[in-house]
Image (cartoon, rainbow, N blue to C red; front, side, top):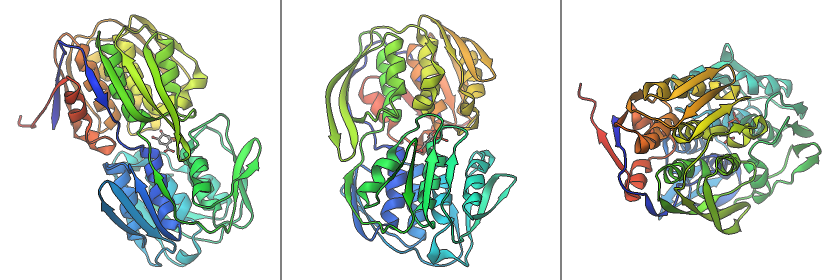
Length: 435
Ligand code: S3P
């Protein structure tokens, strides 16, 4: 399916509630499936990625029921047996499950095969295989990539200094550490999202302060809990960017997660001169959540400090779209990690921006974007949900239409994106691929 976007003639306006947080939903599916009793989760993200993780947990023996926007997961003991688990497009699902499964005592003697789609099968898995193997895990791969075949083993804790800040690697090790002998401590070179650390205590697991790292001791029994998943700031950032880019817009964003290890996009917007008011702040369960008002009053280019990159890692496609619409030059450096996401996001965004007439130069670890003029044209999502949504948002301020081919990949994280944008006044239509 392709998505056609017309420049919008009127400001965006209204109140908007983002879908549930993807990172938290993955973690809750896994922890809920491990915890004894029935966990009740409100706001779980209904999207392809998180459904894949939930289905994997169900296939491993967790009971999952859904009603009235809540899911109930009854867990406690995984069922023994050989299984193939398909994680589709989800790097988080595959890496976290690989960590969780590699030492499960009830699965020793069996083989779990983790598979994914073409994009996921090309992404690096050695970043988890190496430290998990140090803990005693046995994980076969195709030269460090999926499919992964995991033969669960008794593990021992390690202290691991991560070479790159990655919440997926950190979380994979902490999940493995839940059943390892002794303590597993992870030290990061810089902060990455800390949802796993916030959720583990909610499921009854004490964290170890391994300053400057964080850890767990093996053997804790997880207990079911009730919690509400906040709205996803990464998904909301597409709508926020649209409101910032279209002059005169005012959009209120309700119930959005404002975890400080995820808020790099807010810092970038602020440094671009974008106006985002914090109308309220509260803590829902273990996560900070707020209500924001976003105003379309213009954006200017900026040099993004490399230290902000991990705090906005998933928002770079939309930041690049904002930079294309902003006055002046934007410089991105220290963002090589973007090359191993659902697509090579530096290459793909630079190609897409150039295709719609933006003056952009790709660099080995970033890009230079000279904003101000977007002509319009046809681009391809490259199977990457965030590329599709970023280019769709840019279409709102383009001289001619932008058409995003293979835009159905938006389903990966945000199936309601087009409906939400249209409700706020955007002009976007799905078109069948008939030629
Ligand atoms: C995620 C961590 C990030 C992010 C991904 C979700 C998570 O990946 O890009 O979308 O939920 O832990 P890395 O840990 O590889 O940076």
